[in-house]
Length: 358
Image (cartoon, rainbow, N blue to C red; front, side, top):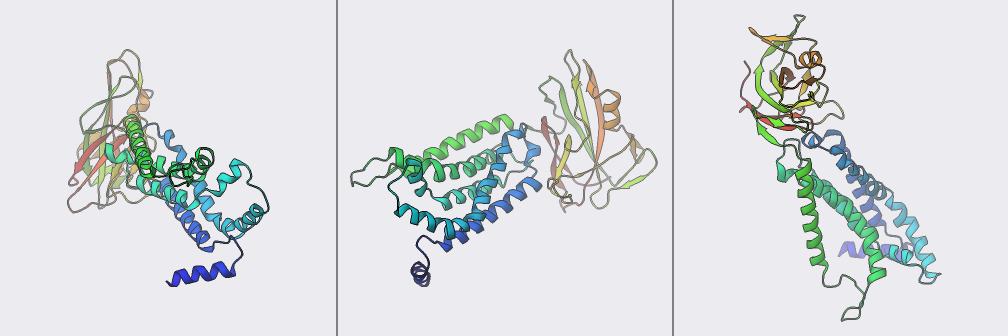
């Protein structure tokens, strides 16, 4: 009851059209949306688990509802009263101007927030159905503002028909059906997009055939407490140890095929214990150990993948095989070991589990 009395009091003392509560809600919603989008852009690692990641660049369009939400107090406190005053002094006006009066700002902003929450659980190691939440969240987050701010208000002006009670509501009695149908269409589209962009998940040792016909595989994963570089420097893995990953490419075709490089993101290791990252680096992305040459661990020598790849000119020839090792620091280790994935960019994901360092 108190909030109703407060609203009634504000309506009496404030100029016609001023809506302070909606301005504050819009400001809060826009700020939350901007914060959530920043987290997704700078720390989310879901981009490592998909191919054709450029398909998801429309995620930047979330900045539009976020910005509008932040500046919405200017509309609800200043612009709307002026609009109401001008509307009373003019005739019906154009379809566009009339449609803008029907736009529902806050539901559109809430839809963007909902879309961001839907895509939030997606990670680089997520399975197919969880990954499908990525395009679904994107479609919801962008579709809601378009619907509530543009298509719905203009549709009411262009296609409204009186119902049996004489009221003009072009979706009267069918809003639930339309909503469920739209959600079904978005879900189907999300599954189709995920089927195209999702990288396959296999076990260590299983090969994946690339688009060029080469078979690529993560053939072995080991942990060592430390490794020694070619110049004699000892690299201590600390509490988590050093994870060694062997990558192998086999070309059964008639032409040379390119193999993954050794830059950041070409071959990534994701583990729940890899939490140390710099600003803008994906979460749970283990830090690479960059070595100039081959290295050793105990009495065993390891061929550096970067050296092997460089000597081969970055590709593997017909009927040839190329293999080498990469090293990663594991910042910590859980009591029961950890499970993670080795992700080769645009190729696939290899699931692994390690319980101790040798």
